[in-house]
View (tube, rainbow, N blue to C red):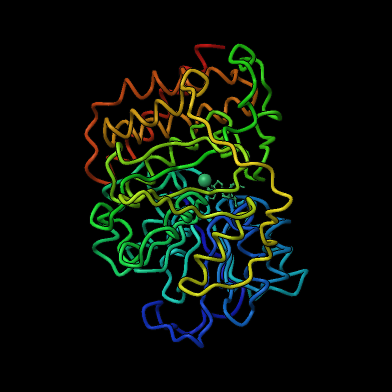
Length: 424
Ligand code: NAD
Ligand code: MG
């Protein structure tokens, strides 16, 4: 594994108190994993509104040099990780020209893990896309950080292993995914205090209602899905997101990954979760209670709301999101899901019943298939075929340790890639 560190000047700041001992007057010291992405940029936007509350200590990205340079100029972090080594070298040169040579730059996957568990950090925003986020996110949990979880693939692919790491640490986990953040907000305080080990039936909950917009193809006839383009798939009607999650929203694999994510975050059985299509995305999810009450969390579809909520929890801070304008809001619609149109969602729900190997395999195949679709190597409708064939092949694998997860992910990627090559 590649790991190169470039010390340009200066040293790390003195070791600071961890989140467990942070006084309210101390600024939260933040590391953003994936700072150049959609969630990363929204996180920095919220942080920029509260310089008295948060300080950006570390930024990480894969290779976008100019974007991260601008972020360095604005937020002056102590360190940056560029996973790609060439990008790290380029960034160093640009930081010197910008008189920011005191910022420490490192590269490689181990550097991401080191950044996530560094003693100087209180809070880690886990916003890398895909399986690449698993190891640094787990490292942050094991190092007892406050972890803001956007990277759903980390939890989906490691499940019980992730939750056990949470149990064995003093980490505080808070959900960023808008649906899970909404559910969290609709739960009583007792359950918010034990994310990962909730006992929702004790709290009177009868169902978790996970809402989804249905994506850009909700009204498109099924027989026209075959020829949709990556640009059409990425044009989400309500949310502005990275390209991988945008395609996942169009196939509704995103809702499937969220189904599995909800199972682990709220300690549920798959039967406890129901998916409700809500095209307007104004309600971000709901909790149904035994007495007939349904509590919903609402707002404009803007990720700065859940980000601000989790950053400041249990306080409330300004996020930059305008209040919901009820008098200019269209009627709320609700529909059930058509699994013929969204076979990936059905696969993910099946995986949730089948167990960890199915979930890990489905995620790996989906990452390969979505990348191939974005690269115009396969059709939109082939994503589900590759996912199904891969999941079925690996469903009986043993997944107990994190090494098992990593090995299975690698095997499935190779297999799914071979399916794509064979179909060319
Ligand atoms: P994005 O593609 O916009 O950004 C991804 C970030 O991860 C970038 O900073 C990129 O440099 C980094 N990255 C990519 N590959 C990497 C690798 N191999 N190693 C290290 N870093 C890498 O993605 P996004 O839309 O911001 O989504 C990030 C995560 O948050 C995903 O797991 C997604 O499911 C989740 N999420 C996103 C939204 C949203 O509105 N965008 C909403 C809910 C959940
Ligand atoms: Mg979501």
